[in-house]
Length: 167
Length: 456
Ligand code: SF4
Image (cartoon, rainbow over all chains, first blue to last red; front, side, top):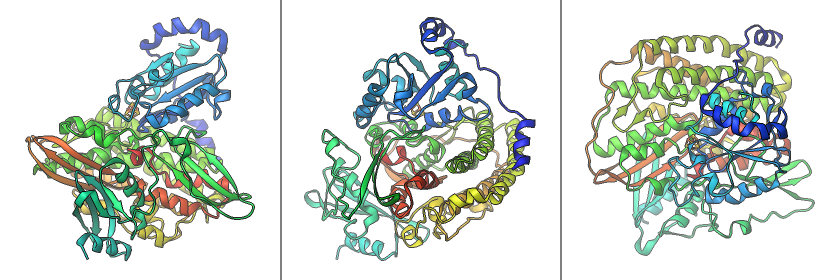
């Protein structure tokens, strides 16, 4: 085990802060107020509201050593009671509507909602299905949209950091 | 006895395996596997009624529940008439099965879970720490996939098929493409078939690597997650480099593939294979040398071989419990490639992990063979407008995906997709009984059933 541990130290793979001009404008608008509230940390509750699971794969990748999101003060929390941000994926199926609402309501204010992926933002392939409500914004107000099908980890990270005003 | 009834009895007797069961207009349709052949049996349901198959063969139960709620057909004698995927207005009053006994308590979990995973509800009935029974309730991510595909042209519908389960997007794209091609009598060019298998093996590799780390992480062995996470990320980056998308979504369409592989891509993949081939065996030996980790995996969540057989459990779930089936043996180009299928009989978390470890190494071998022998030529055949029906049985990382299409006037009249999870989810209920609640996450992850693929 020691050899494996040392190897990790000798060949670090963690990459520099991603920059994405797409979020720069947004960062300016959001950051002053959110930064005042949040300081330098963001507790994120992730919720799948009907995703194909593609978005979750890339959100999970944020924790791998290449992106290592915790070094930016971002962390995923298990309870909505501990969360500042609700990160939602999927076109919001009818069957997940109530769970989405209840999770949101369980979060203390102030709170922000991020819609990640084309489905969550309303332009995915399932948007017009009668089994779906079509977008997160059809149920709760959305503060930030991170497009992509699925959004890459670099883009997810850039979007989340825009909330903190780090980039 | 009708052919339908006979088929039900043959299934129950284990002479054939259930591939799927679905409704198409006024017909109930049954797909059966015997030996290497898939056979479709139709039952024109007079007045909408047909004899329930699950009455004879329980693995058909959830498929029939889904059929009953979403079509006009009625399976006579259906043993469980509760809704399944359509929750409707009465969602809150869903009647869970009663559990009787002294000193039992229940733990409801979900649909929203603690981690970054898909939603579903688990109702545990426990005696102290021990799980007496688990009942699953699924359908939360029901997006109406099959209905949404109807009336669409194959290229449009392929986008939906590719998003049935994001972790198996390549496998679904292949299944959809092969089914449409067989319906229209089109043969994709050989290079396209080989490229599709290359992508399928990259997808298998990425998923197995990610899950290998995640399962060990569920036993609090985070080091493995980090190292496997690096290898998984390398696979996704190589996929992006070669095919322009990390998960390789929408690269395979009916008629062939849309992105070709360059010489640079080939070199990139060879380097990837070399790196994983060198690093993964060392991670496996770390697993072998860590007794505290195996303490959590050996003997945990045992799936009995007779159940795996009866439910025709696909993928590593079936193969870790003695079911020697791999759909790749049934279609090209695998018939001209050498690979071994690992089978074990222990059926525990450890066995499922070890099957995946073997499959990682086998996929590396397959990728090398494909790169060595990739045929040249075009990668796409033209698709005529037309009518017909066709199906495909494709081995995704999780097991065999069955997809059936019926086309009319160049558009999808009916598409049915059956994820391997349909037969693996019920087996998780069986495997977890007698284990402690704290071992559920590791058992669940070792099955890694799809919610999206099942809920449709
Ligand atoms: S945006 Fe794409 S990857 Fe994300 S859930 Fe929708 S279909 Fe899946």
